[in-house]
Length: 183
Image (cartoon, rainbow, N blue to C red; front, side):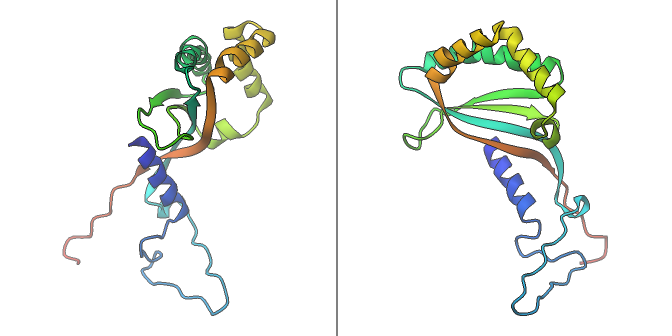
């Protein structure tokens, strides 16, 4: 269900005037032959939703016979890293999802969603922030060498990344009700 909401949100963001709606003022605009229509301005007041936080969703496929190893990675290491990042305010929250069915050999079966306050918090590089993220990881592993060893032996050996996407959570606005007496 959450995945469907993310797709709807992205569709609304990309096509603010889709579905036969006309621009503000109620008049459809025409363009002279041979010219591309101007893209409508997507100001916050004209959109049917309010921006929310940003999710990084990574979809994994566990390798055959390695499901228990991947869950061990998540429980013993990844969860502790994310809890450390959360306690420092580097992320807002995180969640895991499992998919018990498959759509083929390249499908995912475990997803990790990490919540950030904004696109900037997640995508804009900041050296101090990157250092704090690294410190949270090193608190769990103790050293860069140990981290590399656990990644190779447990994390990378137990799963493959199917895809990773950044999406914004949105809240749909209420439909404006017509003034009484008008149709």
